[in-house]
Length: 114
Image (tube, rainbow, N blue to C red; front, top):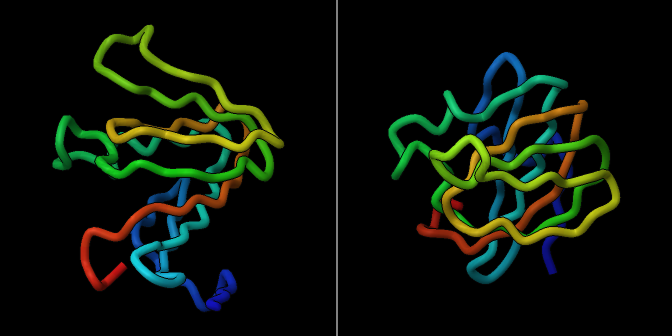
């Protein structure tokens, strides 16, 4: 079994509005903690990835807040996630915080570095 804390989980992405911390949690899974301030848009941090979106599927739980999840180039292509919801985000997404939000997700690692 593996456990981690916020302080023991390394920063993978940091912006003025958001911080994604990710760590291997066992087998081929990584866990990520993602706090976002109201108005945060992860789009700029994902530039350069395929379609400028996160290429990893995530399963997780929205601990607090409200998120818009863009899922394509069309402005109408998005989902809304509310505090207390479990979720599955397929590859090709960009989170935006409509309210200050915090989530915990897991995903399969692409490499041994998490």
